[in-house]
Image (tube, rainbow, N blue to C red; front, side, top):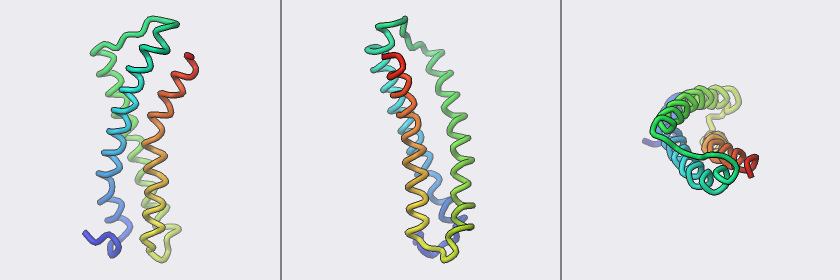
Length: 119
């Protein structure tokens, strides 16, 4: 697909899968950080155990957060249509990159914050 000759709606729809893959990978990395650092940092102060029930519960909550993130992703298209009057591809790419890296960094930053307050 030549992404430079498409409308804003088509471009954002085409890139949603990339966005969601990034969110899933970031969630997995955040979970691994939580398990690894939890044993080192939290276990020193209180009991730390990760059960199957907790993993399913946390996965469900993360799925809800992905749904909320996708609502904000849709705002990218709205902002694109409002401010990208020349249908500039570089503008669209920068807007996507800004939202993408912000969104995928949040789960990891959140886990690091949790570990910092327990340290």
